[in-house]
Image 1 (cartoon, rainbow, N blue to C red):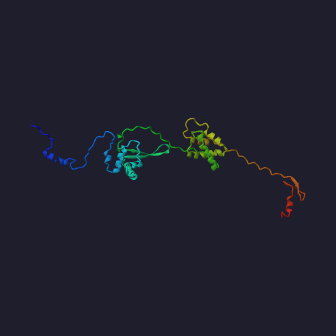
Image 2 (tube, one colour; image 1 turned 180 degrees about the vertical axis):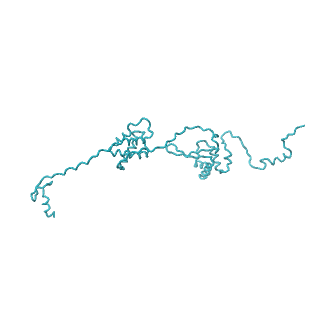
Image 3 (cartoon, rainbow, N blue to C red; image 1 turned 90 degrees about the horizontal axis):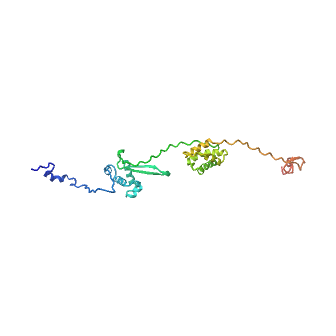
Length: 283
């Protein structure tokens, strides 16, 4: 006698099986093929996200499919898709809110600032789950800049004197390339140089005092070194010089008056003061 298969459905069940088939009443049917190249793995947490808009989900899929270094700024995406910059910017903000994008502004060489975009394919994952990334050498932390030492001040800071001091400091890099100063450093040091010039020190002497006997090793803070030299080597003021006395008045020779024959001193012959006052034209 054959053994009955306990798992085989009964006839009644086989007749009604069509009612329980997932595709019997319509709906989605997948016709899938396995990808072997040029594909991107997208999590259902993104593809079926309950709060993201369709545009945001589409942009996230597009961004995750791009290679590293690709441009994903608003203008580039607006040129790629028919949606305008306003809708794309709003969709990117959605992805930032839900952790699929991180955008930071970083300073690069020559004072330029760029926007760095990081795409995260699984927000909130544990750090240990992240794929290993190549380690980069840590950048040295910038030490907090200390204020420059104070410098002497001129007694009479005339604009022409400050201008002469500024030009001298700017030209130091011609004689010593390590003494390249910023605009702020020049403004700080200019009164100290003006104090030297005010004390009858020539520009050449000031430059030699600042650039002579510099250490051989690199200068970490050239402006601080110059500020120290301007203060430590400040020459004394010039000695007081009394003004020279005026020359003595010229002593005219004696002459006889043409009117009264009295003697009087005058540069040329003529009449004395009394005779000149008696003349009709003097009245």
